[in-house]
Image (spheres, rainbow, N blue to C red):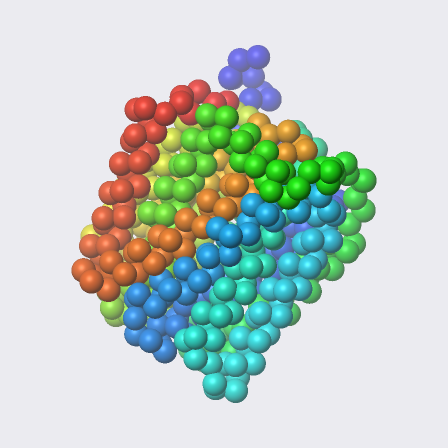
Length: 413
């Protein structure tokens, strides 16, 4: 079949093909509502931390606190996701996140919230995410056919980034008008939507990995599989570089809004929303392309252009231009993160998917907090803009090394 044949062309009809599955439709709309609340909380929490501490470094500490459990427990979460009902595990993690949000809301409403409270709750949220992330990624294969897996991953990004567009902007307005507590309580109640969606699903029985071996042995099996797959190993490395040197930029946005752009909570929300607009456009582009373009070329293109846009963002200190560049940062990042995710899942056997996605999630979720604390500390010493520029240079060097010396990612279909 040639590349010019009809089934290989980008198609708007392909963009939403995963939604023909009832279970995935329930997941899509439930998650959309929940993610809207999540981004409201993340935006409000970052600005609240900066208001309480006036410290870029402390923003990094909060990000690091939320990421510590990722390194300690996410691969264990992948083992658990291969051994028990993923739907049941997701309901448990969503309930845990709801409780964290409501506790933070209560502290804010009573006016007693302190920076250390946010650190402790961020750690608790990280614990829930350590089990939620690999389970959520592996659960996609239970809701859609393998042919629709890449489309479902792209639509997951669509819902995620639609929430980024709306959530931070609304959070900025609500924060400025009524305070952070309302952002946190809206997030707490938003989890009802995804829990209800999970409970309403009709799922086929799934074969689970046996428990004859220990958790450690099962975990080692998943890590060993990744280690012996050069393409998967390299894609995870690219994701690590994007998260460590690029996605951690989000940690600095509250300080950037005030110190660089001389704005407020609304400015903070606008910057996050702009990144979400770009990511949404990128996710829709991936979903509509289907199998009509080389995933490998798109991944490598995204990994090289992503740091270039961050470097330009570091140099431009005018709000309209900053918003424009944040859109391109979001657009480029989605090609690396989403296509790497979909490619890794498509190359992984069903019985190992939870563990492999546990490795992926450990790197994805664990790299951002390390980057956050490095970037926050660097910003405290040399300023936000130089720190962002140095981080962009490091990401570009890593992507260039993969292009020159790594396995031929560009040849991936």
